Image (cartoon, helix red, strand yellow):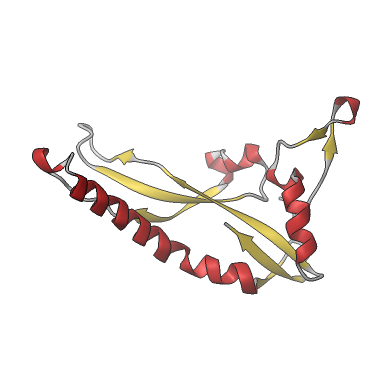
Length: 146
């Protein structure tokens, strides 16, 4: 896990961008923060998952991934690189309602409201930061960036 921006150069001193914390944006964000604090990149992934054999029942879990974790570890189930933070609600529909614009608009609105409530706490912490103990046992300010 990386707690500071890094730069890696490959052949011919070409800047590599494989990890999010290798980016120029990460350096810019880190420069705006107070001393003793660090950026924590929050990545959200929504994936429709079937919960029965016929595929008629589906859920939409929201996974949270910390961008500071190496990509290889983020995607490895055994490394616990991601967690489920919630589920998006879904609207059930019958045949004729499925393609009506009012139903589609309501479905989109429901998703946006649900995401808003899920992200509300993190949006506040983007500005104020969160004091937590770091891997070096010192207290650090962490600023989540969504």
